[in-house]
Length: 326
Image 1 (cartoon, rainbow, N blue to C red):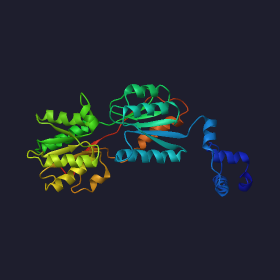
Image 2: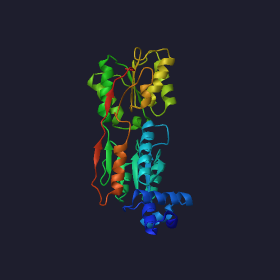
Image 3: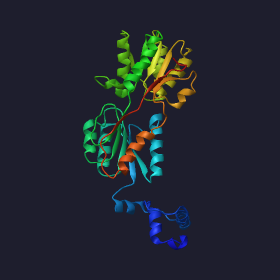
Image 4: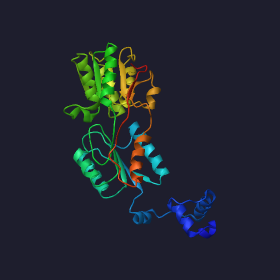
């Protein structure tokens, strides 16, 4: 390859290994062209052994597929990983057994760092704290867990959801149903989005609570909303813990012959792009930015730092976006 590119063996090594050595752009391109011509593929296993690095990062989620914010997070992680010569593996944690298995493989060195976005109680603070003590570079998206030795990303979702329900109450709605994620129904005391719903009702002196599951997927949300809206004492508003569920609720209202927001106002959570093209457009709470570049960058900052970084915490702002559905 060096002969074909008319360069030294050392220059070939610098270019193909990605080492930070000055190589002229024209020379670098000759080496890359020669590598393609010869069908050269780097031996990643040998490189990993040499560097004691896997050149992999791990994305840990509650499920695989179907959650728009997870998909955006995964896309941003893959793009930044590609730019830095890393590959991405994904672990799904949807049970206690899966949580323990994920911790075991991360402890075993399957990746050089981890980006963790798991809702529910499967990945406990004890499990994550134990993993953090290994020195694995980690970024955890959580409003509840405080960890030493890793970065934590928080969102003021309780406050934003409280504002959303207060918006409905200010519009005169009093029978407001909450479509919850399943894991939210079993938390005592309540946290997050459910807590925001309850606080808003308390502030306005509204005693009636209509709380049901349905926010985890579109089909469940449609069925739940249909049942609520066809009842004699139907709600005059629905606050859904996900935009997916809120969009399904709009469809359910339409199919029940009801107008939105005339007969029933609907608000979701997440600010996904699909909410802009519903009829009417979906009111929602969530981040204004539809990306997680700042979150992903935290992980690669840790991976590429020459010395251990202190634990950092960032808060991603959420906003109430009033549109046609409320």
